[in-house]
Image 1 (cartoon, helix red, strand yellow):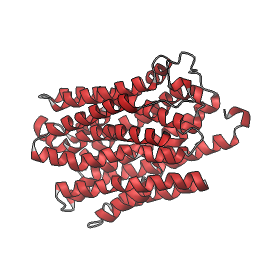
Image 2 (cartoon, helix red, strand yellow; image 1 turned 30 degrees about the vertical axis):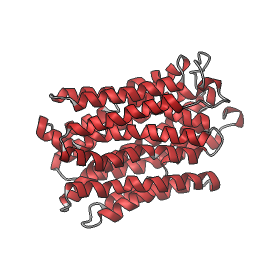
Image 3 (cartoon, helix red, strand yellow; image 1 turned 180 degrees about the vertical axis):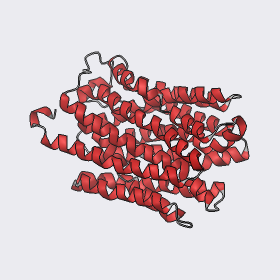
Length: 391
């Protein structure tokens, strides 16, 4: 049953990445249509994450009063509505409004999808399950990198937003029809006013480290998605061809992240895995600056750089006891959203300085490198805590 639930959540969560990628895929069209500069495009990309700064904690607290399915469903409905608002925009500010509405949905969807997986796989193959689960996000992005560009070229920039909304609506319908909570966790099956929102000191340290690692990792990924294609275009690649090459990294992550999670569950050695993979991410971004190296760089990025996504995400489930998990996920994602809100505008501003894609890619390298100290700190706190403080 738990693997069927994982498949359902995987399908629904693809919509989050599919909706997120709309703005990055049609950014050049919006520059022409509304006169944006690339710092503003970066701001609109990051605006999708901005509601999480204010709503991640309240979203986690809401688990005391509503079931996981209702809150996740609300998220998918908001993602649908936000895409419609952006897709029907006639003025620039309406694009931002739609991104904010979709961002609210992203908060609830992200918090409760992750909690559902943690509840279903608590103590059983959690890194493997999270590794499979997290690649739903890059799958949605990869489909968007090609599909949104094709839709924009075939129709216009409105079409990608509307297509993503249709998918999110279908995901919401599927969730309400087929999702079932884990039978051994009453908190996931009903209203939960007894859930605690008071984390232990160790849990605070662990969840801060986990959130920082996940936020930095994803901010680096967004820099890759936004500027790798610009580097390939600067080397002479056509727009659709560059998008296809860059999406290769996201597609390969399907395989690499799953294998990485299985290896971590079976053999451990998580710190070694992280060092090798983050070195791969940095080298891949460096290779993008070499003419003709786009395909091997994207392959390296997908096969190695993005492989530990599930291992990092699993830290959230390992940091917090089940009875405090909903609120703890709110803390985790608050830190994540702070990183994701700040990262794209900084990268966009760096690009605006000299209109060179290699400079924001260097910023992406720094983000991936910074994942290591956060994960090492998590292991240090976890391994040195008294056993009585770990539950």
